[in-house]
Image (tube, rainbow, N blue to C red):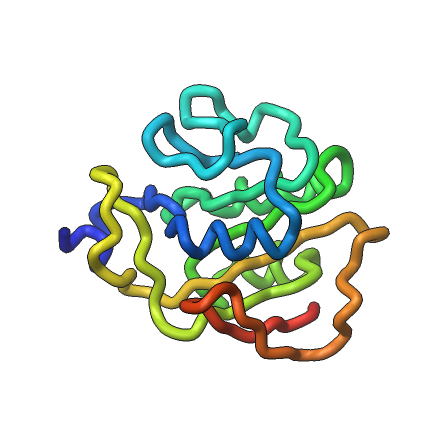
Length: 170
């Protein structure tokens, strides 16, 4: 499956072992905001057909949005939901620190950013994760102001046995 190595698809499922480690560390998630009937990590989820961008999000939200153009609309939604309804939103996204959306939406509003060591193995439409992504990934965490992180400095983190990275407070 060479699609994960190219730009053939913009929709890649969350690696289950990574999600499990993050979910355990935060006490679980209530909603997968960008999923499909075949690829979802929470019992409650929105698909392209149910249009997460037009719905309210509540509780702790997981978001692995389509990676192509239009990612800005997802970040705008994340910021709006954290300020109104959702307790937190964890966004798994390619680490594109040179983009406009990173500087306009992530840097000013994320409470934490985790950069992963190595490349993630996203899940394709067949449910397989055989090949590493052609890009580095990051986890951007957005929380209500009352739930800011208690770690005010850069730290190394370990998520399960396979995943490590660096937490950068913003």
